[in-house]
Length: 125
Ligand SMILES: [Cu+2]
Image (cartoon, rainbow, N blue to C red):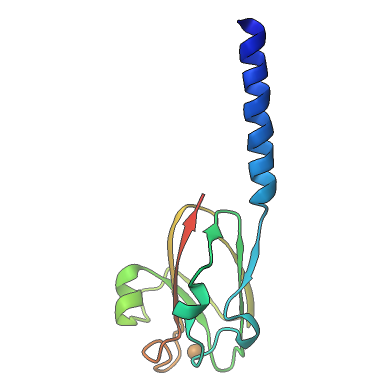
């Protein structure tokens, strides 16, 4: 009985290790080679992708023309630019998906958000 449960634990541990190897941190370049622009369709960019806790999001853009605002769902839907939680304007910004949940980003410049420069993702375990 004792031995059996030990073996059971070993098997569980093995699969946990395998699982964490398979879920190794992934880096997602937002918009791929197009980057974070107002002419990229981010709904099609996210289609079919999985975002996991521990993954990185990289926003590449011309910081004279764009920025990245991390916002809530209301600001995302309505392109509200003055209630952001975080603002990035480096032009090459890396963001860690540190917890499970939804993440929303918009560009705060001009009417870029209204024109579709917005990104909503869900990070899963
Ligand atoms: Cu922009």
